[in-house]
Image 1: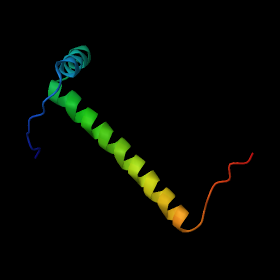
Image 2: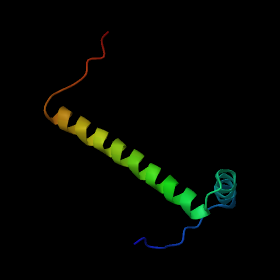
Image 3: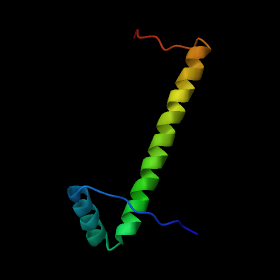
Length: 67
């Protein structure tokens, strides 16, 4: 079961969401849910890459700047 909550968007962003929903024949909720899911996936990958880099640095693994 999904939870429901409110999000305040600047008018310009709300208009963009509504336009995408209209053009794709989807609901506003679907567009926002997909956007949040994509954002979460991107942020998780970003944080994982940072953590991996920190682990490698702690182990003394560095990339040389030379070609």
